[in-house]
Length: 290
Image (tube, rainbow, N blue to C red; front, side, top):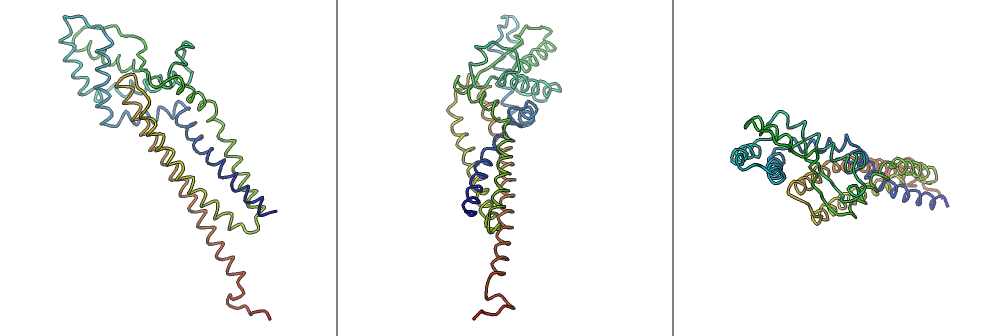
């Protein structure tokens, strides 16, 4: 009976851990505004992303603003300059961070918006700070100031994808309950086990299996992300690059979990070998019973 209870507790601990770790990462790096801004901010300092983003935002600016004919040629030169070097402007980092934070508030319900807009898409990217940045530099170069919308929202995905975002916002903060349950299950498994070393071995193997599972799931999510429609090039660029950055960040959590699992497995094997030697009738110093 004790062996059965211990085995069930090990399985329960692994199942709860499989839920707790990804949920904790989502809560701290996606649902939390500061975490979202941190990952997005890393994109803002990546040269390749900056260059492509600048070109995409400049094109979006030109498409969304009705420029008078007399200044179109002047504006064209300024937009070419923006596409080539917007990332080098001193006020670009602040505009990018504002873009990330505004977008997070739109997606996770902390910004004022209509109910229809709140349920329209899975991801809304407000690039208004970047558009205003181009507007200001255009004004400084030409002396002409153009009115731009307060919000310039590009959309990504469908209404069904929005439901996933809402569920993440609702359930990810509860990760600590699954983590607490997993910890209790581990303690129960160790308390009920006849040989605790075997419990540690299975926990270590199970943890390594979870690391492989999380890696495969992240790769599958990346392939599925490619099928999500984007409204324009800016949304498509942000979607791909944000997922790549998030995948790399979660990969660090997976690596940490794998190292911990490997350590637990190693300790369990050592204890199992030492226990086996103590139990062996042929261990040095022992006589065979007659």
